[in-house]
Length: 243
Ligand SMILES: C[S@@+](CC[C@H](N)C(=O)[O-])C[C@H]1O[C@@H](n2cnc3c(N)ncnc32)[C@H](O)[C@@H]1O
Image (cartoon, rainbow, N blue to C red; front, side):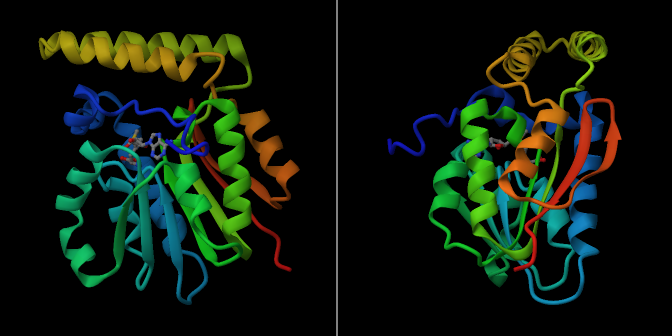
């Protein structure tokens, strides 16, 4: 393991990854967010675009990104079980040369890219999984690889800055998991998703909106904007200023 990948975790190697499509049942907002990321990229000014996607998973967000005609996508993920599902979902686009799947953790994958040559870095529901120090290094790498004027777009779980309200939303979420998986008699998945929620909410992982926007601004991104917000789900864009 390289020093760069040392702090990347693998949270999707078990049953959650094997049955990732269950996310549609427990969090319908996730698929809608992938669409939002895709629509945002599709609406960027015309011209060729090379996109680095962080945490492509099973390829749901990648498919949404492919709506942008001519976009060439390098899709990174560090979980082989997720990449093999992406490989099936995106087979035609991989054959056409529009998508390249890369097994790498986000930090190591970005470190392999040259400075200032990427038009867009896109991601959905991945970056909140990172440990905080690792996430800050990823954000710095995103800034480095982007072209001047390039853009980072992230649709993700951003914890509310108002902690009491955030706790209530998390409790609602846990309640929803129990109802959904109990109705399906899937206590195995319930256990895995509750454990996952504990990881998201832990002090060393939790990604709060305000500090996240501040961290991007401190790196030099300008403007940094919240384009959509519904509970913990937010679409955030951050531009690397043109030279
Ligand atoms: C919740 S899934 C989201 C997948 C996809 N973007 C979507 O919206 O359906 C998160 C993905 O990020 C990947 N991931 C988590 N940590 C990672 C890291 N450090 N580097 C690369 N991929 C990572 C996981 O393997 C998983 O496939």
